[in-house]
Image (cartoon, rainbow, N blue to C red; front, side, top):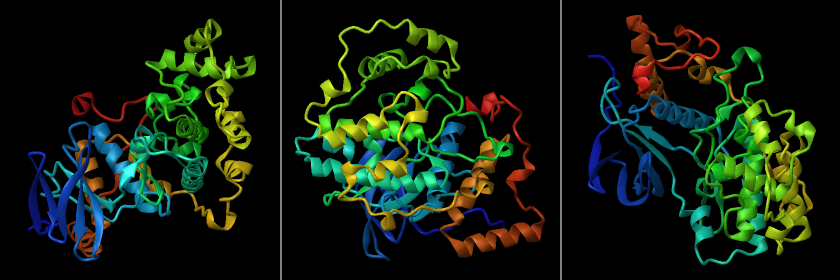
Length: 400
């Protein structure tokens, strides 16, 4: 009989009227969050005697882009280990490799997120802002050292506990930034992160951009912590650009000439800004050091934006900065991300996700690989051809 499932003894629960499954080692307690992906429940890990969060990703293959985001997040987080990043402790797939539709991911349980805190009446002192900002930058330093761009930093993706510990989550839109030209994956897409936190180079449709887009998002989050409301709440891309320029001023000609999208460049050049408020007007209560760090984070030109290592050394964070306790790591192994640049199918993503789940079941993984070798059916992503320049990764009928 072929090896095609994890064969875990599962218990079934009803959560919001839908089935929620978990191995016997987890006692599912109650739902703690819900989103487009599915639902998150708190649970007790009876083997390790600790509370965990179990996320059910529903109908993972309904859209291949969504399945690929799930694979990307699982693969990135398996390689990253840091106090200010959410961890993955277990992945399980109910059913057979050929037919499973739901993916369950176990991680540490956090109490809330920064978005909920900012909407609450809970007061935030300057010390709170410093500590939250420091942890965001400390985690981001590690992420960037791995040559990963998060691309979706926002208050909702910053999980927080009652002791103010903060962890960055949600890496589905992240991108591994391999410097080698031969490994260039699909072009960087415009659709990254929630509009309010998008950097100008993303709004202006630059096809390639770098780590500076995360710094812009951090600047927007920092301002929101001080103001208790979003800095640039744009209603669409054009409105977003209007709000940014009304606050920061018109970019200079050198910066404008770097915008590859001529329509966007002309739109900016013809903007008539009325009733503008400067950054200083919008943050009258910010200290001198806080305002200085903010302005260095919110430069229209990505080349002039502060980098994460320098932000950590800024005087605003002097009381918290500790170089010996701000770890980095080597860049990720690009061979784990071949799926990003290959012509792939639903079956390939199923295989990749099944292999990813097996990483958390080492004995089963060894058995599975031995069986493939014995049967002469060894799977390898490099058996699938590289994408041509500008080619869609999926067949249109698969992505529909």
